[in-house]
Image (tube, rainbow over all chains, first blue to last red):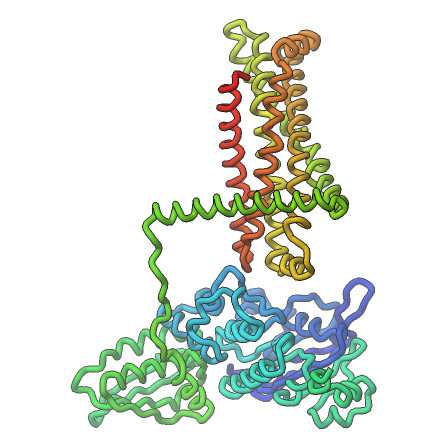
Length: 257
Length: 373
């Protein structure tokens, strides 16, 4: 909160991650700046989700350092790490809503645990979050199993935002949605980013999201970063994968199939 | 982050001036909420409210909502309201909050009916699902009889391996130990009357007629019934059962019938093996603890047990197997989307199966005593 605003929110240096014989990420250097929407793209299996999961601490790394909000996560105590994690929200690919809680209880879960606030405020905040992501208070009483794909993404987004994180990780926020719902989700992310001043780290497959909401795009291929820049930079880039991705395939082309 | 009070209020020039400071964020929301609520209700003679947000260092949706809620309460009390010194970004957030929480309460449910009514309904539902499953099974068996080639032999053999063959060691061990325990207790008590020999009669009678089947059935309900429910339940959750249906297969025929057939065959076999292991366990005690020779034990056992006993015990087993299977599969199919629901139905499957095993055993006991066996 009172950290230097020019300092990157995430700073990754020489990150290497592998499973068994296979090295998925090999010496990645990456900074995510404050209030920026960073989109990570890459072919299937290029390590996008692995990068995200390593930064949020779900996967072990082999080498390198990860700094979150200017602090090295290896040098922090568990308690400090917990506090830091509260400043980050994560939207999982499948939503990962707790299936035994209603949508509203899902959102309230972290508020109840982490904050000392009245039940009335918890209730009102949960409804507020729901309405901010475009759901209604009535949706809050539904069970995750009763939601459609787009609603799951929205509810999961509301849960990720429960504690007003400064930094959100989104793992394919528009995957599995029709182009119109995907567009709605993109708009929602853009609106929330603008009002809440979020820093967004987004793994995506969706060229439309990249075009409409990402300030900066990073392309992963064969274990490393092959391109880093704005959409315009990507269109000029000469790496073959980047070329075919940004010139060859758009959502319109996919829809035409 | 400054830890000064989130707000101070002063009345001046007929205005209520509230000076907010520090972080108006989630971590301090509880404190801010309490302080704001102390200001309410505003006294009748208080003037309009001015909030000075210039000294606020952090502002998030929690702070914004508390401010918005306070505004609604102030304006609800007929007062005017103004905010000073707020950054444009924070103002956008505050305006965003003006659109939320406008609806009233959402909870509108019908109250639950009188307990006996809901109990009767639940019971009716249980009976009807049980009958429906039995009917579906009979229909599937009928179809199978018409087209025997559609029988899933591989699946059945695989299930048999899991349900019967792999259960043999644990069932042998448990029933053997129970035979040991019953025999030891029997000899210990009967010795006082000098009736050592009749312990063997008691064991033979008890194990062949009741205990063997009952014990094994309870073990199978715990081991196999629960796994059937969990398997079918997770298939239901992942829409695998729906997928099967859309491909034109009947889940009852493909998934449930092989499982239940296996139980109908496996339970008598396991019950027989279990009874023999219990008799062997009792035999070990007779020889080591009671000092009988093994010839005497076997001779006395022959005296005590007739073929009828074995028959009375074993005839129950296929029925019990079918009941365990039907209850387990039914519960599996009732699993809804959540992990909790899976756990709940698995528990119910085991509890109901064990209850039904004992009920059925009681009914059989009544029946056999009525026909004099």
